[in-house]
Amino acid sequence: MDLVIKGGTVATAADSFRADVGISDGRIVAIAESLDASDVIDASGKLVLPGGIEAHCHIAQESATGGMTADDYRSGSISAAFGGNSCFIPFAAQHRGMGVTETLDLYDSRATGQSVIDWSYHLIVADPTEKALNEELPAAFARGITSFKVFMTYDLMKIDDGQFLDILTVARANGALTMVHAENSGIIRWISDRLVKAGHTAPRYHAVSHPAAAEIEAINRAITLARFLDAALMIVHVSTPEGADLVAKARLEGAKIFGETCPQYLFLTRNDLDRPGMEGAKFMCSPPVRDAATQDALWRHLQGGTFSVFSSDHAPYRFDETGKLANGPQASFKQIANGMPGLAVRLPLLFSEGVRKGRITLQQFVALASTNAARLYGLPRKGSIAVGMDADITIWDPDETRTVRVEDQHDAMDYSPFEGRELTGWPVTVLSRGRRIIDGGRLIAESGAGRFVARERPDFTGYPGGRAAELDPAFNFGAEIAP
Ligand code: DUC
Ligand code: ZN
Ligand code: ZN
Image (cartoon, rainbow, N blue to C red; front, side, top):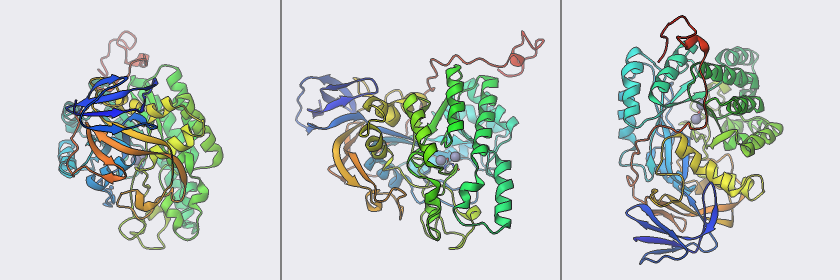
């Protein structure tokens, strides 16, 4: 064995037990009461957990209007690693007029040689041409990109319901998971126009302009479309109790519907958007942060299993002219980039407020941190501690207390929305395929140490689903409509 992690408490999504973990050639090769090697990490008093998998973050990604995220694959992956992650899945964003293959090649050039942790992409589809649907999406799937994201809002990104059905059909035929940003575009435009006309342009009006109703309607529609076809769908960044209820109901009924929520919806509220001057811009994301009652309801959904994935939605735009203030210090909420950073604090927030405060078990933490994302996004060698798995391991000190500070995020940002929070439970050592990448608070890995991971077919076992009768030739008088 090349390395042994000795004396720790190993925790998976199923169990916790005292064991040593032996690593050889980047894989876990032994788990036993006592193991030895020339290289040993002493993990006594610590938790030995599967490395975090950050399944929703925006890295080296330009928006449809041209704004670039502050983090590239080097700084983003370093920040993720400091936050206990050994793998991440940012987005590769197709914009209108771009091919899918061209998009993936572009992101390959941005990530390769830069990332310190393993990575893949979710493909954002904004231009579902015939070529994209018939040739390029199946080719992307074959290349290991097994999840596609669509937007129901944003004028330059949104797809209509027919295009959504086309993408779901291709995804289903290939075994891919479609992800959706579910907000009703018409409601947002209607209310935003009225707010701006009346001079209500401060950041706090962002919360008003993205009403809960916009999310609820769009989640309902997205689930209806996916269930019509029996396609798998992940509703990302769910921010409302009613939206979460819709996800929970569909899951109970056996549909292949999955949900994700994010730290901002559990830890921030619209009062943060109402901070003085332009400070509120730091807390603008879409869908917006809501209120205390919403936080309670989303915690209950996290506890009850509605959400399979808990992601940072790290979308880093600095609080300066390169980011949030690109349209000047008095910009209207409509002209401010949506998104906030959080790669390095996703897991410490969930551990401190979830595990330490008795809201979730350590096993639920591991599932939300890593295991569920590995299964749903097709990473069978990651997400657990078992013989044969990649040695992607994070050693946690469950008792260490630190205060969140922007300088400890190791990203390219100039603020953290969670600044000043005291959290207990922090990652101390992170291994990626058996190599130390973070140790004793220091970055060890070189840029480019991470690898692209070709993902496999997501695992939808346990969700029998069922499609609309009108698609069944036995019911629809023999019409072959969708494979
Ligand atoms: N959607 C995201 O997923 N992230 C940032 C902003 C957005 O609209
Ligand atoms: Zn989104
Ligand atoms: Zn996002």
